[in-house]
Structure formats: C-alpha cells, structure tokens
Image 1 (tube, rainbow, N blue to C red):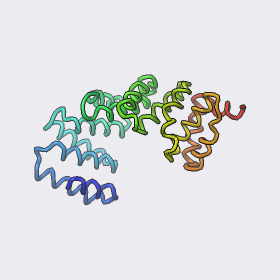
Image 2 (cartoon, rainbow, N blue to C red; image 1 turned 90 degrees about the horizontal axis):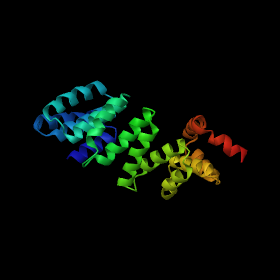
Image 3 (cartoon, rainbow, N blue to C red; image 1 turned 45 degrees about the vertical axis):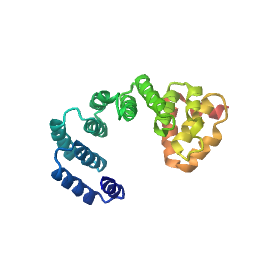
Image 4 (tube, rainbow, N blue to C red; image 1 turned 120 degrees about the vertical axis):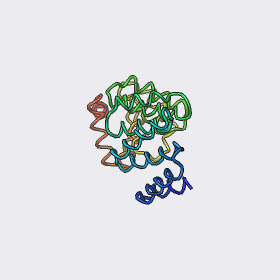
Length: 217
C-alpha cells in the first residue's frame, strides 16, 4: 500500500498522495515511518514550513529516529542551511542510511566551500556502493576541482556508457586535464544537455581554467 501511495506521488498526484499519508498517520500515530514518508513528500513539493512543523512534532515523539533525522537533514539542505544539514547527517554515518548520509554530507560540505571534507565523504559513499552513480560523479567532480585528473577519470571510467551528461562532461574534463583527448565525451555531454554543458563549462573554467587549456592543445 505504501508503495502504491509513493508511486502516486511520483506520478505527480501530490495532493491525493499527501492526503493518504496524513490518513495513515491518523490510523497509526505510533509509526515514525509514516511521518517520515509524509515529510519526504512535503519536502519534495517544497512545502518547507509544513515539513518543518511535521518533523518538529515527529522528532519530539520519536527522538533519534533514523529516517526522521535524515528527512530533517534533507529539509535543512533544501532550505540552504547547510551547517544544520551537516549536524543532522553526521548522526547517521553508521547504520542503514550511512551511505546516503555520507553522500549528503559531501553535498553539504561542497556547498560550505570545504572541498576536502566533501571529497572524503563522497569517496566513502562511493566505496560503500561502487555502482552508485551520483557518489562517483560527485567525487570525480570534487577531484576535478582539486586538479586530481587521473583519479577523477578512473572513478568515472566504469560509467562512460551511461547516457548522463554530467558524468560525460566530468569524465571528458578529467581526460583532458590528464593530457588525453576528452573531446568526444565533452561533445556527447553537450549534445545530451546543451544548457547544462554551458553552465558546467563556465563553472569549471572559473575553478581551474580547463577549457582554456583544452583550446590551446
């Protein structure tokens, strides 16, 4: 039943799914998972005030609950309160949500302009699941910004066949930075997502001037 409700939400039927989530809390107010599900939905539609009120109540009822703590971190991140997000996610670095928390810590520290810490957590999340694309891409992106091209390329090499513009862009930049021809990957990234390519290219140019180097080769 919960899967059906979540599928309904993911189809864009937000109001109906949220009403069902509220009804389920009323049916069993002693189940913290039901509060966490509703909180995730509210965060998903950017109803941050409602999510905050719900999580405040739920964490009062179920202090230390893993899913509620994770949702509180997601809410803080969504509201760009990255220092608060860190405090929540740091509570979850062991246990069932450890890899997700490590990944969110990496994103949070990236937003706090602490790339070395961000990289440590991104690599930990990647090592916990070597098939996880988002963690590998984030770690490679951070390595790219630090000028560690070979390791960045090695991290993304297994994912080159995935049609993901961000992955292809980062891999192409890492290959170029390592002295190899990354143009085919950059061209593929631009074809998949021209707007995203332009935004990424501008950001990387600011970080390390890679595009200028490529043009001069």
